Image (cartoon, rainbow, N blue to C red):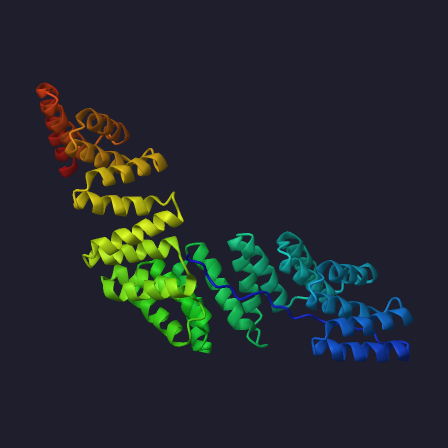
Length: 404
């Protein structure tokens, strides 16, 4: 659920205009179409651009504008055809290359978009083009290339609109993905300093603080996002997890309640609320939450671990055994699960079953002091006193090595 909020592509579409020597009728149709386009009356705009193109088949102004109108109608194939038609006439038209790259980004054709923006940058270096190419690299998880593009965009000191803010926010995201958390926080802070009301940057900075265990700082950022109207519903989940980490379990439960109200049923939220309830000694409520998490995701090993532990604590050994059976099915190399299941079987009097589990635990972790000690106890119950002594001695030797 820790998903960074990116500032989306800069859909700043250009009209490619070659008005010199244009037929007056074509120009009149073009101007009328552009007026409809700005009013977002896309179908009407296309009708006027079609008329302009009937007068002049190579009117790239009408062709480009028609492509933009088609984008408004989500006719991406038609828009692509119009932009490619212009590029047949002028392969170095940076504005049309940008528009084509934008269409490709919308359709998640990021490799094609990178090619289009790269071609445009050979003709004209513009921070917007670096921004869009950086977003494309980011979506392909090519974070180093994304950072380079955002670096180059910022180096040009853009001032237009909120492009500098978007460049910083997305460079912060890419830096965070590369593990450069300090750099990411610096970028988000730069955005917040320029635009204190930017909840996108506050949310992202909170996620990074949470990732590096600075929970108080994360909570402060999430508090501000929530005061702004909590556009990001996930913010309650993340603040709840930070409150769990700072032992504010009542506050955590309140946040998880709100997260469920806004987001509906979610495995992570129920796991988090179950943990908070467990620490508030509401074991019944915790078990209910872990059970709900398991219902939502039957392969949720954390839910089985948590519920199984509570059942074991309540001495409901048979129910605990079913949970740890499932954990081992999901995680057959989990040494701790074998130790716990072996202990449950021991308490149920299934000594042979317990012995098999402790054998497997020791096989997975040959230096498990607990494994040797517990296996010794089982062997004693089975009458193998020599084997029990050997295991208890081994447990002491393993402990001694740890102390050294």
